Image 1 (tube, rainbow, N blue to C red):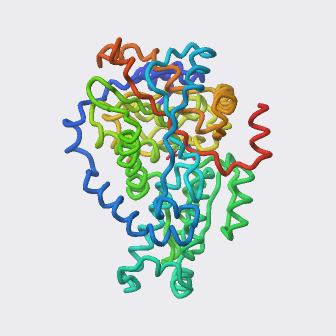
Image 2 (spheres, helix red, strand yellow):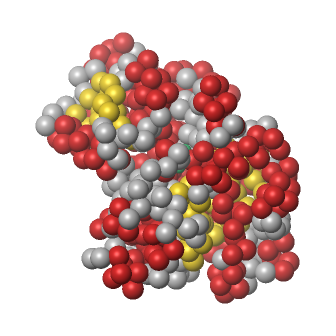
Image 3 (cartoon, rainbow, N blue to C red):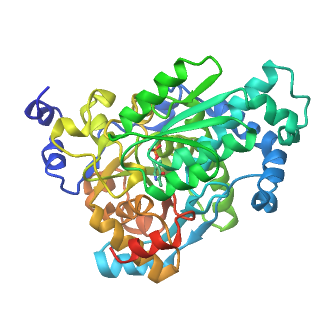
Length: 435
Ligand SMILES: *Cc1c(COP(=O)(O)O)cnc(C)c1O
């Protein structure tokens, strides 16, 4: 299909191809109760994932002492950022009303990004499966912190394709269990992420190409070895469910802060999107917790808006950003994905209210703004989420048709999902600050 035909399917593509910042309102979104029963995964699957993470908590608490205060549950703070709200309103005319909150997955224990949810969960699930098959597990999960266990898992390998953060999560938890771990990295991956992984004993294979090829190669190598397991970022339900658990825990955090979510107090969530798993899983979880009172928006770089293209055209993984003449190159390494996940796109196409794009330049404005106003550093990819809060007013059709005006909008909560940053080295922070 040529670009003109694609534009006929979805007129927004005319502006997307010009690398303009866009606000796309999803015409396919439906009431949650109508959609729920048609989805490939359910609330019971989220329960199962949550319970598995709880079973592993004693092991995690032992192995990663920084998780001991939360008893081995890897969870991040939810922080009100009033200073940043003023900054965005003053500098970008954002007109944000209600409360602006930062979900600091940037500060998740173990691997410092949202991937500490999905990635770590998938490694643990695979570990439990293997342990049960081989009769290693008798109730006490701290057994995984034994030499005998590490020796057993040393026979097994894990491969993953990653733009960086997924590799960090899988690599760190893989090494903790004892796996031989290989991370296949795209050219966008930051040098410090490769270095950190190698220091942890992870094998890093570099590809002079984008993410999709790194994934393809990893998948191929893993398939050749029966003791090998491939973490498939494009199709993994385990990753997706690991992310989905976030929403349950967020519900408790909101309640603790006295933040009500109901018909008169809508909640907006702005989620940086790469291949789709993290924002998709979180949105899926949020819809299960809050139904039609929550409105989820994804944000992608102007040069790598793969999920927008996939959903707006309905072509999902049959379209990539290069098909419309974009490069796929961006400073937001966590979002540098050219082709979206079909599994995620199909699962969330009736749940997500819209997708926005943001220029790389803007990411650094938000990064500095957050640092100056709140003294919080997050990585450029994570800053994409602010675009949602800043441009929400432009989604005027969406706001009007959902009655999101006046008092109702004034009573809203806005969650900017900060997906990474606490592991960024000081030198890199300095570079980011001055970009
Ligand atoms: C991976 C990542 C995302 C997006 O997750 P996907 O599952 O690729 O959509 C967002 N922000 C950061 C920092 C990431 O590392």
